[in-house]
Image 1 (cartoon, one colour):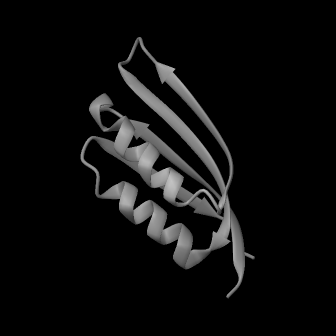
Image 2: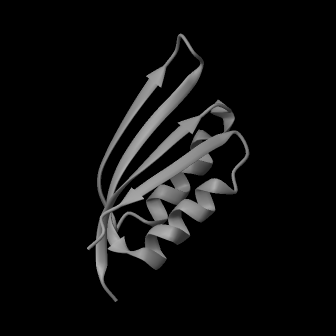
Length: 81
């Protein structure tokens, strides 16, 4: 199956979910190329951007698990090839 490069953006509004997010990201560490997390204290949220390189199935599974967590917003964009 073809691999794609992409970016996943996560906005964590419920800060009690941070450990759960980190556990899921650890499970998919083999497709994560880079990660940047910014705590935006003035707004009471954390913003994480993740660069991934994997199959659409793997990336979809990661975003799907993250998307099931209440208190998060998750969006992804993938390369066409």
